[in-house]
Length: 95
Image (cartoon, rainbow, N blue to C red; front, side):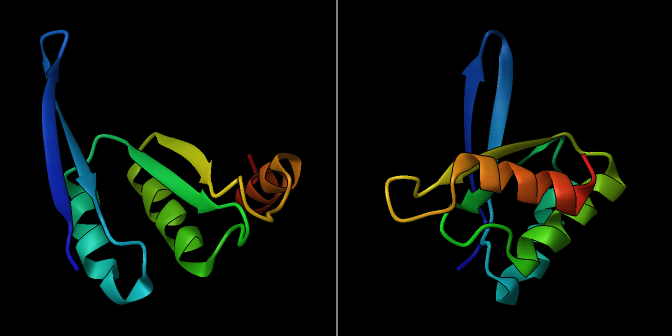
């Protein structure tokens, strides 16, 4: 398991998407990829909510000043409500 890169051109810009493993056993790879990033996407499992690794990565992004987009997946399964997820994010990260 390692990071992968996909790139494409959009309106005169070259966009690079770095996909990193979310599991804590591969966090070094993720931290290295964040060093090259201009922003990040935080993907949350709606059933699990905020996980310890997600909290750590959010803090790394915050310290680096990286803009962070948040998406929740697995909403079609038994999960926390969107409001519960938003409350977790807001409370945990003081947003």
